[in-house]
Image 1 (cartoon, rainbow, N blue to C red):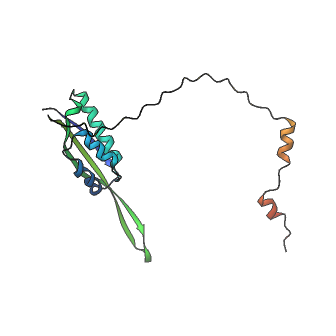
Image 2: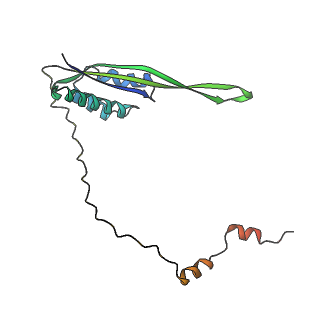
Image 3: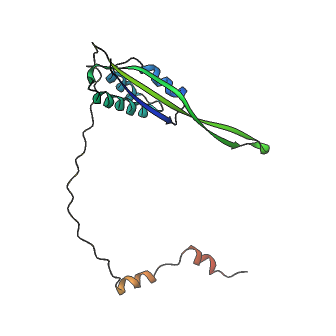
Length: 167
């Protein structure tokens, strides 16, 4: 039985927050999981969406049927921790631990999966317009009128302050 995997390491979202999303979609068909993640407003849902899409691409490379895929396992483990110090009163300090997550996603094939309800339309890709070669612009030489306008500027803030007489 073929399995497609995708891993995401050093995601700067705490594992506890990622487990709240991953617990919902574990065991779901891929289309339903993508719909759930896309509509959730929890932190880290965009990264999980990209991870699922990456796993589906890996499954296509293994010649697996995209319509029969489901999420077999979804593991969220702790990654490295960034340790920071926050100064506090009387010269003491508090320690701040910025946690990271490692996510492992495994997709497998299963028969009799109903994906008709959860179709996510793909955004059409924008086509680039053919660009025409631009004419080289010559640097503009200053005319005497331009230089005259530059010298007639109003005095700035510092000139107003420093032209005052001292008492």
